[in-house]
Every structure is written in C-alpha cells, then in structure tokens.
Length: 492
Image (tube, rainbow, N blue to C red; front, side, top):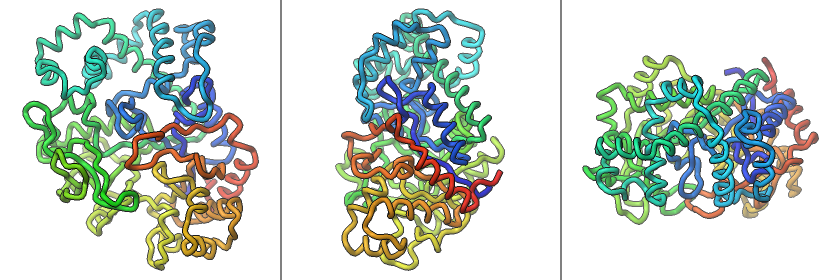
C-alpha cells in the first residue's frame, strides 16, 4: 500500500431526505468530495442488517446488506416506485436517525416497490449465485417477522432446530414473503455494486469492516450452530466480551457466542472462508475488528452479569491466515489491534503481514514509550485521530483534565482554542510514518460535543449521527487536500 489517506463515514450518516443516509445521490457526491480533496479511501462500518440497538457490529447476517441503505430515489430510476410514492414519505429529522420511524416508512416504500417487481433473469441469477446464504437469510427473516421479532433461540423447537419439514412448510406457505426478502437483497447488492464501481472509477477504494463475532440472534448462528459453542437446543455455553479496559471498568459483555475453532479447523475454516469471500465482494480492503481474537479471545460463562470473570482462550493463530491465503489468495486486511494487546498478538499480526491501528487520542498518558505517540509509530500501521468508538477529537480535547490537556498542548504547540488544536491534531496524523491515515469525518469538520457515533457499553442514542447537507465545506476540504499533498499522501 502506497502512502495514502482516506476518511471514515458510515453511509447511514450521509445527508438524505429519507431520515437515514443511503446509496443514492449523496453517496455519489460524497465520492466526488473524497476525490476533490485527494483521498484514496472511504472507510465504512459493517454493511449488514442491524438488529437490537441498531449497531452495525451486531448484524442479523454476515452476508446480507442493510436494506435501510437502499435509496428510494434509485428505486424510482429502476421503475419500482414513482414520484407519488416518494411524496408520501413522512418528514424526517436531518441531524439524527429515528430508526423506528425510518423502518416504518421505508417498509411502505419497499412493499410498494415489490408489488411492481417482476422476476428477471438477472434476479434469478442473483438468487442462484447467492443461494448459499440467501435462502437461509430469507427464511430467517420471514420466521422472525412471523414470531413478532423474537430471536431464533426462542422459537418453537421445529423452527429453532431447523427441522426440514418445518422449513419446507414455511418456504412453501410464505413463498411471497421469502421472495420479498430476496428482492430487497437483490436491490441492495445492485445499488452497492453500482456505487462501488463508481468509487473505483474515481480512484476511491472502499475499506469495509468485519466483526470478529456474529450476533447470537442472527441467520449465521441459526443456520450454522455447529461452529459456535451452543448446546443441543441452541443455548450458548460461553459468550464473548473483553476484560476491563480504556472504555469500561468492568469490561464489556458482548453476548456473542464464541467459536468452536477446532471444528472449523477440521474443514479448512470453510465457514470463515465464505464470510471473507463475501466481504471482499463488497469492499477492496477489510478491517478485521477485534483482531486479537485470532490469537486469544475473552470467553465468559453464559449467565455472567459482567465480563470480569472471563478467561483468555487460544484462537486459531497463524494457521487460520495461512489456510485462508491458500484458498482465497493474498488479501488486503487491516488489523484492529487496540485494547489489551500482548507480544503474541503483535507477533501474529506481523507474521500475517497486516498493518495495525494507531489512535492519537490514546497517545497522551505521559509516558514517552506510548505506542500511539507519533514518533513511536511504524510504517506498517493505519493512523487515526479517533475511531467510531471515541468522542470527536475536539470534544475529547475540551474534556481533558488540566494535566493531560497541558501535555497535548505542549506536544502540538497549540493553545486552548479548539480550532487551533484540531488543525494541528490532523496535521500530526497526516505527517505520521503510517502508510495509511484515516480521519473520521467529524474530525475533518472540527465538530465538538454531541457528534459522537458510538459510546461502548451503552445502548441508547448510538449510531444515530448524521452529517448535515452543507457540512462538508470547501474550507475543510481544502485543509485536508493541503495536508494530503504536504505529507506525501497524494501520490498515484
């Protein structure tokens, strides 16, 4: 990877009159903005359908797309909707996402579009090509909706345990609803494919994101229970999390089922190979979230109230990446190696040949050997001012205690003015030795408190932030363009 840079912005945060960012005109304009300020990458969160809490890291499927990202305007272009359908859409706030309202209104549009849909050879080919996951996902969604949204592990045994006769009956009786969910996935894949192709034509490559774990209530866990530590009726034996860290004093109890790595090793990690193959159909580069789980992962007995009493369990290690490489060939992967990182995790990352992550907000603990300080950073890394789990850098700076704020000011040579701070902070990231520099759009726009994307360990108010239509100004674009040129990140 040449020395380069990009901006992080999840598509849900794009401006849109439909209450949530989508894959329509604003996404194409965003690609144009990236090109105009000489960026080479657009980083996004996972693109899967979200469930409880609206988190893209708790998706209902590792393969399906988030249909809330479907652009109604493009459905008009395809002939599935008309202007009257769009005109009937309820007014939406433009600064936050009201997921309940968006889901309700978009479902009306989707059903209207489906009523005009006629199966085509292209649709039939999509269903054949994606059959290996699409059939299970469509059935899962139909059953879930028929059960008032209950998670699969609370369904009656014939459905929960996938009795063939029960699934065949659902597929037959609910054929139209199964087809509806396949239609939505067909549309999402078409819109994403068109957007990605346009971005690539403009010289912009998309960095995707793959969670290490899958959501317990997901089509993945329902369709392939043997690869997870579940008992005979689908209850988890151990669940995932992390021990106490920078974000929480009691650790984080994620609730995802952990993997049976020995079972997966026996068939060459086929489940993971399929998952990675799909991820690279969506994106050019994939960030592996919670990379340390491949070396060892934090497992907590099911039923525990916090993550404190868990234990580290060995992961698949380098054998996994060597096997994947033999099957899929070389892959461009970024390793999220934040948190409690040991020498063994670093050794695995280097052996696999993946760059790690460095976050400037973590650099100022008063220790000269802090690995996130710019002079300690090596080229095989991706430098960030912050991640989606951090507050904006301006808000972070304003909330520092006096001692740490003096340290930041001394390091950057700035005063108390937030505008002076953020411009110098961005400069520090762009001039770092890291081959790749990624800046969250909130930091590009110098936004302060109230613009955070996610607060780990909480469930309220996350993933709702949106960029205003006039937010990305020529002035901020010019600053990023200047830094990109100045620090050698604009080369072809």
